[in-house]
Length: 431
Image (cartoon, rainbow, N blue to C red):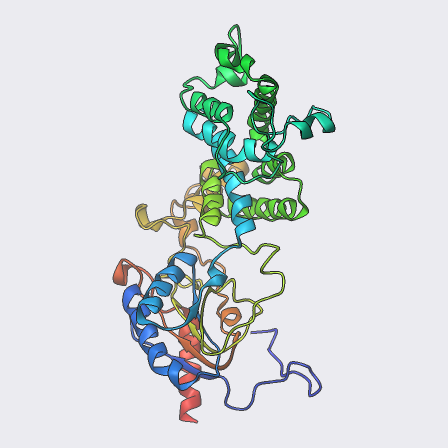
């Protein structure tokens, strides 16, 4: 279909491949997810020693699948690089701080979360009283603090350092707090006044009051869209340009995920930040990714299909090319928004939207109804297959495999793009 792919001009700096390349191999036997990884691993173990000067990559649909393959490759003793599955340390630290605070504003009644915000995020980054003059703040920073005073780390300090005793004592008190509203929005009784020891530590009450002001601000900001909420948190927590830029990138990501998953609330979105912080989801940062990625000959790169955009290898294994990862709008395709356990695998979002439109235009009262229940979910869906994008990073050889998912023949099959490419390869072999 238009627009047709045209050969590059003779003087193009990225010339057309040599005739007959890349060689395309389509493994058209149905495999379970585990068997698919075994087939790929067996192929690599046989091929890699014979091509030490070639680069190779295995592309997977998501990080979890990539980490599983990395374990198998490691057990087989083959050289591999899974860095494209992992975010850099700065990205993980930024995501972890934002996730901790976001989890607090989602469930402020959980005292343990409040204590984590204090000990792991707020104190290491913002522990210096910001209202104090510069010379006064510096006099309470470091190991030379006066007796009885908490040691004030510089903003952005290491959250893993040993906490000064007053800081740890306050954290333990927060962990036992069952009515956080007594701290956040005190009425007759201010919870801070119940901590008699606080006045014995000079300056600590002011620090606790500053902590409360930030908690109040963050709690009230939950009425904002998730991207604006995250930017609000980031502007309070970070001062380094890289951290602020990462916050913006994460805010855009969460807004996109929220649009794609209308049923998600802040709890699910906070979980996505946790996945990034714990390397279960990858997002490019601004440190070790800045110079680009250079594949190493003789080393297997394991990456997600998204992370592989713009990169090239001599030999590429494209895995899980099934109708779930690459739906083509076919009648039997499964979509993430269409839950198999709902009647007729209805797309609940599409159904709700159709019913709202019926109510708005009055068509719900027509006989027969313009949109019978379930019809919207079964109408042809747009072709969202991007197989051509994922099949472009190879220079010499491309190997495609597919799996039938965790539920066997009740889940994915070969997608339309796979069938078309298989037919193309067979025709090429015949000619």
